[in-house]
Amino acid sequence: MNTIRTATRTTLPRAKILQPRHGLMYMSSIRQHKVAVIAGDGVGIEVTASTLDVLRTIQKKVGGFELKFDELDYGSARYKAKGSYAPEGWVEDLRKNDVIFFGAVGDPEVPDHISLWDLILPMRQNFQQYVNVRPSKILPGIPARITNINSHKDLDWLIIRENTEGEYSGQGGRTHKNTPWEIATETSIFTRKGVERCLRFAFEQAQKRPKKFLTVVSKSNAQRYGLVLWDEVAEIVSKDYPDVKWDKMLVDAMTVRMVTKPTSLDTIVTTNLHGDILSDLAAGLSGSIGIAHSLSLDPTRKSPSLFEPVHGAAFDIMGKNLANPIAAIMSSAEMLRWLGEEKAAQIIEKACEKSIEKGQTTGDLGGKLKTTEVTEAVIKLLEDQ
Ligand code: NAI
Ligand code: MG
Image (cartoon, rainbow, N blue to C red; front, side):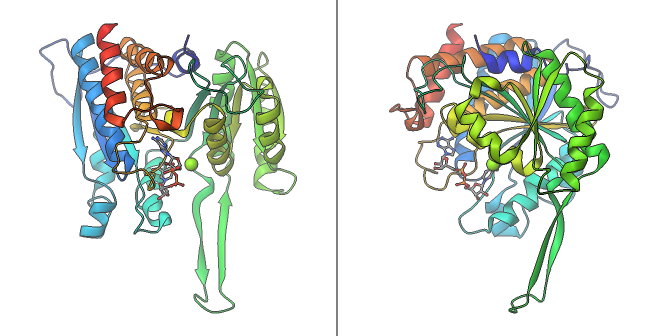
């Protein structure tokens, strides 16, 4: 059984009944989904190619729906050639899509804060993708990373990260640049509304999982304004979910608990920066960053949600056909689920799990296969189902 599947299948908001878009009448009963595809940079390009192969195969296999891909050149190559990551009007262009599939961004020749702030972070804010959901589980066939965490019975978490404000709200600046008295500020912003909507989402997810247990992570001893607000709002929101048990952790102690008492955790909610770090730790504990997938959701469905592997451009392995495509492929399964294509999502997830169980993996999971070989293995497994 796939926990990632259970984590999301039973918990995430369902797709609405599909309506014809903007006066377009469909003569056929084929469900059409517009997918903006931003492969981006580095291994993002490689794993996106794998994902598109898988999606084209599943579309043929399952039938009944059609994915209309709009492959966009947004990324660092464009930035280096034209001076911007995306063309003018990109927010409105992307908004015309039902969902966005994203590979990764980042280039050795471009400072990381430029690549992140020119594309990925504005996307999350413009489309109010206010939760980032990262399911984490040890899949069969994955070797234990530390001795007390061996199987999905020990580690099966749903991490929910606030995705539009907090430590990554983008407020701050630099004055007296390049002088010894230069000053730089980086302001965290916590709005009651932003905190509440994220916590509410987290309580709802916890309520739908068998353990009905939520851990709220903050650092409200040292950060005495924003994160005290965070804790206070958690208390208030919790009253609406009396069947959800919950506890609070400071983020530093949380890292220890994740390693030493993994079974004491289930659903986890935290701020933007802390969620970024804790979910990478979870990826490491559950096997590899190469299988960690994520959903950046606008739960109101007013704007397109975005699906992407957790990892970045991976400079050390890019262009070598070594990247694990599973994180990207699993992200695309969640994308199909979000679009209401549950059957297709499940088939892809099962194929990914089978490939890992059979040891058909890339080097990060101890295997010998290349990116394209893992992709072929997954495609074969899904065709056989
Ligand atoms: P990274 O995730 O790119 O790489 C960290 C380590 O994980 C590397 O050793 C890499 O080889 C390995 N790794 C990553 N993806 C893998 C895969 N699919 N299969 C096997 N191994 C994989 O993080 P790093 O090195 O901190 O960042 C590199 C660049 O990516 C930077 O420019 C950074 O800003 C950007 N980045 C972008 C993200 C995004 O687009 N959402 C997320 C994280 C980083
Ligand atoms: Mg990260």
